Length: 533
Image (tube, rainbow, N blue to C red):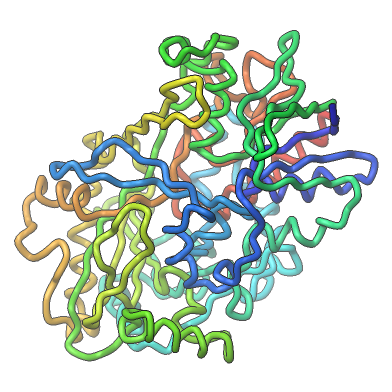
């Protein structure tokens, strides 16, 4: 049986960072296990290629969730299934979150996770195209950039935001106030800069680092109260791999609690009903889940502006692809959303509680498991969500069979707070598109439509026509109490030699997208792991 010092399960944003840091010592052996394949397809390098990747089961997991909204909408939560994980298929938006988010982690009883600890980590991992500052880093392994596009709609959206009182910012991560500007993104010279490209590929030659792909981890091996390895499954069958020091689960907020539950670590009732022997009764594994639900507004334009004309048909996509290959420019070189705003749903708040993402494109209705479609007529869209929702959902296994489906309950807008903030932010989104100069470009609201006015109609529209943010956290949340899944050093309670390092450990939402926080938190986790060695 093969043995390594560390086994890292999941080669996503966290796993790639851990593989890099833990294998830096040539005397330490590291195994990185990825259930998907290699990140070799050119679509990963092409930023707008994510639209096709998200619908392709070779590169993305599709987890069905319980029906959503009055219409009983069926949707799937998508996660990356390749080296780099979701950082290889996401929209590439790079938001770090606010100082207060990280200080809140410490206030909740998790020392060592405050902003004074995390800001130097962000600066050390960044190679920011805007240059170094007190809040930005250069020379790190992860390239981030912002590229103002040629589309006048973007400039007009930013101007409309400033008319609402939001200040224009070249670096949306440089302050925590109301602001609008071009998105910071993990893109360099028109190519995606995934966690695999930043952290894994530069060190893949290390003889003490082994990377396996197309390898599923079905459970953690436990002996005498200690995690000693994992059981894996490939096309060749099952095998066990052992860890001398630690097993680290970095499979994400869905797969990590699934592996724990399949291993007998989770709520006793859930495990028993699934036919799994209870090893550790940890009541919150798979619970306390928080997720962003995006309100969507779309508008028809008077003029043939935006990306629809370049992306709405296979022929147009092909021509845009040729332009991209020749210049690394054009709509295919842009992140999922060009313009981002952080704003307050109510003026008396001390900091923004809502985020708006704007793209000069309009999409056809989502079809689970299919690539994103673009409308033929010109349009513009905005996605808005509550930055820090407090409604909690859950997920749990239904069988001891690793291939059995999960039960995932999102509980979108399941609290008074979320419904109040949601309706207020939706109205603020409409205010943006009703402000000049962008208002002069619009002929009609096509989604959800001007008839949606009352609070409950707005919430229903968010459920029936909105989109998942793909930012779920909390399913293995850290905390100081004995029933918290992991402690502040991310050690799983009830066992030795087992940690969780991914977004599932966040007990509260960080204000924005999750990719940047996960990489920084994994860097911090590596310090903890190496310090315990």
